[in-house]
Amino acid sequence: MMRAMGTRIADTIRERIEQMIVTGEFADGERLDEVKLAEQFGVSRTPLREAFQSLAASGLLTLEARRGAFIRHPDFVELVEMFEVMAELEAMCGFRAARRVSEQQMRDIGRTIETCEAAIAMGDFDEYYRENETFHHLLYEASGNSFLAREATRLHKRLKPYRRMQLRVNGRMPQSMREHRAIYAALEQSDGKAAAATLRQHVAIQGERFNDLMASYRQMAPRKTG
Image 1 (cartoon, one colour):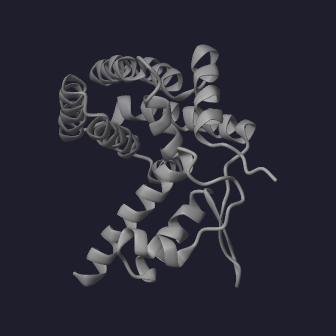
Image 2 (cartoon, rainbow, N blue to C red):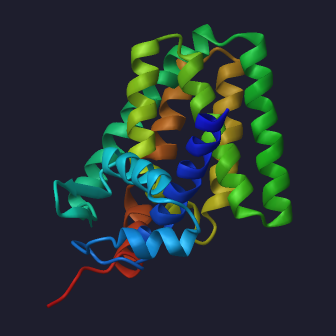
């Protein structure tokens, strides 16, 4: 029980630092001050270090022995490449899920859509993102391929702050919701090609969305100078 509570604290701290990184509160290459952050969050260094480990696994921090944790903003080209791979992984999940999804999984996916719609109506961005994340993880599980699901989950975790950032682009949340409904309809019809195509478009960054994310990324994640 104590371990579970510590893990939850570490997860909360990870999310807060993650958001601080992508909104530009830390510059690329900046060293994180453990003492200052522990005081700011009102925690010991143990959950803070657990959060650092998680952030390092997602590529947002570099941990150096005897030196500490340093911010690492991915190069924009690297970020786009990761989104390209994510789009293909999710398309693969959707294609397989259309043939393998269970009735219970369909009900669970349907509930995330209802909750997302309610979040949009209330203007609750955080709730929308949480349910959006659940929607995607349920799709990975519904693929029936545990290796594929693990790989999709791993990359999803690494891209999490940037997927959240993308949803903040004006008009993106309602568009995302429409795409969720189209994916659900494809699953209902056991149409693997439609599910794959819709998911690929849902995740891939191209055209106007490419330019929107690039502008957001440059504004929210400034590079260290001097």
